[in-house]
Length: 127
Picture 1 (cartoon, rainbow, N blue to C red):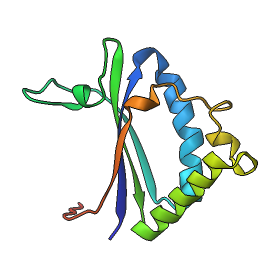
Picture 2: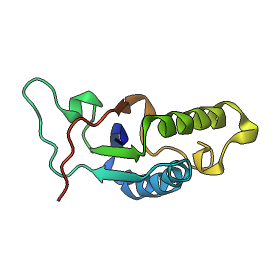
Picture 3: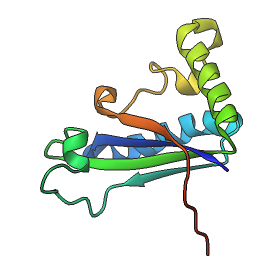
């Protein structure tokens, strides 16, 4: 079964186009490292909850949209190898891919409020 990395981000609404370009560049690297599918979603109907919600989870402020994204990997081993390669790129300047270089492809959102995790699918339905 596949393995999923999930992400929730708050991004200034004014940075929508910058986010899309940033994602296209960075997502291409994940695809080259073995990802099967990447979906980047801009919040459209993100409601306030009674106890918690997406907006509170990422401390979204007025003028910010909540984004929900995921990367589908063929398996956890492929994902782990890709993440090890990404870590290598981030710690060794000689190995950084320009698409992942914050100076060349800056994050158009506050990365400190990004939440993410790896998930094992337990139920999958398809049409």
